[in-house]
Image (tube, rainbow, N blue to C red; front, side, top):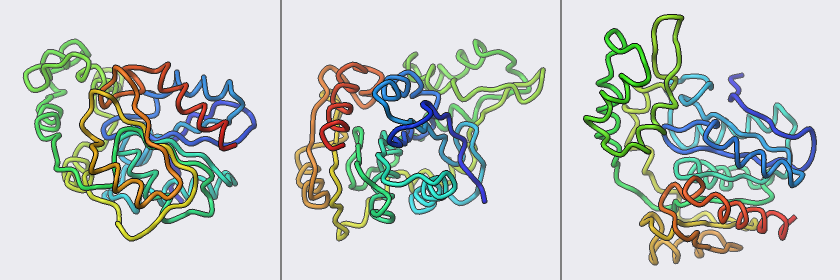
Length: 259
């Protein structure tokens, strides 16, 4: 059995699983994870397949990603979990809620709706694939090379967290760049629209983000029968990083209210 890599915070308490977005890793969530653990949750920050320190596999779709979460829960004997997912991780969390409702206690989705999204990472993926690690031997050099494709410094810093030393003299990407590139269209796939979810759910959207619009709210309320939608002020799609305090307050209040 292939199991996802995890960073577990807290020796006991209700299990809270956190799922990162596309091209991210669990490392992006360590600071918030510690805050949730302080509330008494046992926080499981996962690297999803083909990301971070988890296994690489040619199969990459939301069914497989949700099955990975189930396998992790079965192996670690986790039941009645709370699950928090951002962007792609939110789609995984929603898929998990459809496939394994008996394991789910609470669902939190950060800035993504269950609808279809067109692929929009082409330039980023092109930039990542253009990095020649036979020529580039430092993070600074990789940053300069990537800037030709990704001008936003904050986005580059997020992407460059995927760098690691393959050996003592050569850098490489941790993520499975080929498989992720080959399956980029799958990232935007919609959930099945005829499958209702009844567990308590919270959808968070950034006030500066266009990922969840008014039409999406209607879809969310139709499919997720016991849900609330809340806006995080002064934040875009990366709402948990751009306004972590308000994000933490919204999630923790929901968790405690539905405990």
